[in-house]
Image 1 (cartoon, rainbow, N blue to C red):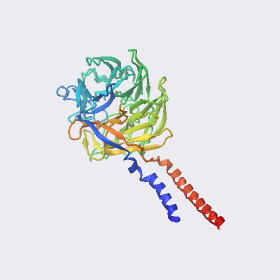
Image 2 (cartoon, rainbow, N blue to C red):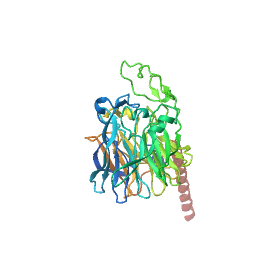
Image 3 (spheres, rainbow, N blue to C red):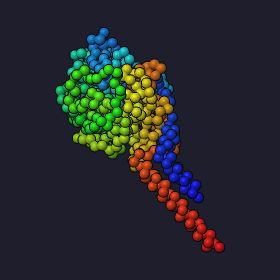
Image 4 (cartoon, one colour):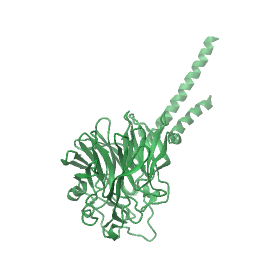
Length: 454
């Protein structure tokens, strides 16, 4: 009898601590297309063809003339080249270039962490739109980079591939600096609701609303900072002999300086946005360097005012968000640990870059439906026409042995074992205790029944 009580308690502890392994088996990953340079967000046309944005691999920047220092990668040069594109992938996996020779900027010489074509979407009428990023000082876009097509939202002519500008976010950031910190623009993703596009800029830390009728930017709002004491942050070890990694430069506006001299921005870094079942918007963030684990937040955004309300937290480096037909939210963790622990700037993989997909039920219950098992440094999360999930895998790497992929995540029937949040472990233990009491009452009743029978 005691053993049964112990077994019940042990089972509850298993659910609380180790059964995440079972949850990770609730989906399987397969490669739809590979050899992609920095693949990002995507959408499907009515015939089931996927249009995937490839941010490209940058270039030599005209021999180094058209290059700027990266604001997020230790000032490694970001150099431009016409290597960005939108690729059309048929249901059978056949790839064709839909639009090519688009501007891309990326770290030299690796081609990692490119900015360029960032997202592609169809509206309810079948009209197509393209978003491009910048990932740097927007005042250098037209002059130094010679890349005026970056940092914009376009309407796309599906017959010719022609682009009509609807909004210029880099120019808006340069003139307004909505969050009041450093001047950086990097439009990363967007969603469409009615006749309005909602764009998240991971450089400016801003959400924009844009009229798809050609009326331009309607509203812009900065995302709230996350003020974590620098003493609570974990940093990479600086190279031996480095005392002041900034070279004596003053920190940008809104930055804090950690004890080791590294600048900390405390910025949101929004990277994903989708329309929620109730008509509001759901936004997910990446967080700032050094990318604290378990600190990425999820917001509800009012479509009219763009006011942001935190509705969930506890994630690491989110880069995707989407809902299923039942109203469950799916979130994509780019890498499950702070990115600097798994990959160096320049694309040198030094550790584990596995990511996760987490299902958040309408009741708040969380399930890890896939962790690792081929999911690595992914970006963007979408349900395809077949009802399965898709993401751009290795989204920050160029084509090659470890290059970018479009992958499909087939959801297995029956769902996954539920993985509770850390705070619910106590509740599970309480459940186990209640279960044990229920067992005891059942045994007592059985004895009474036997007595009555006698």
